[in-house]
Length: 254
Image 1 (tube, one colour):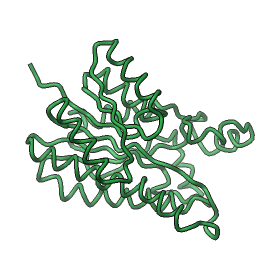
Image 2: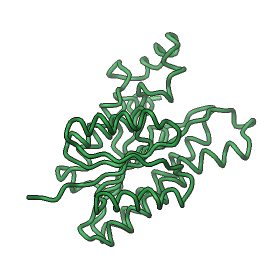
Image 3: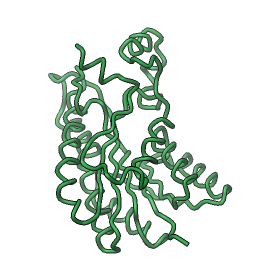
Image 4: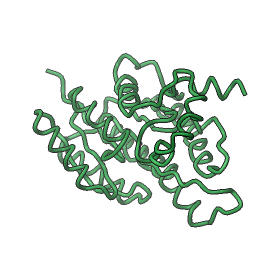
């Protein structure tokens, strides 16, 4: 009987993260879901998984703090004995004009969106090396690692940095049996996009840029995560899988 695989999902209480947690649990993973502020939502998901016979651990962690990341990995290993998959999903988006961006706003977004995945990947990789057998790291990036967005320069810079981090680490970690891949969502119906989705005019403008003519759902991303983490994707590392309804095709035609 094969050993149960163990995953950590940062930002696992809402949106894409919650969908990823549920999907991995259905696929048989023991899952640690990290939350920052939404403890009730995280605990509800864990209880749901437990009621279905799965295993879930809830840990509070601010991914911009390296000590919190270390604790997240340590608690996971203490509970489940190993770590096979890290999904770096936690992120923030603070839109503001370039000329109005403050140092504190810059520091906060880079800390969560780039520093967090960097050190979470480091902590996960160290554990994977220590236990042997390799592993997989999946970063939830964005189409904006490639596509510019006016009024969102810091976010785009962070996601662009995540693209190069993934490409570089793929070279460094491959000899250790660790794959690292980005997923680049397009427009997805999550709390981070609530204001846009509440405005019919903005929704129509957005749909005009998406060849498949629909807004993505968190499960669209979760399905991609599950596949990339599986043995079916064992020949994939150091790249980005865009899950965007064709938005990148539209952007490339401009």
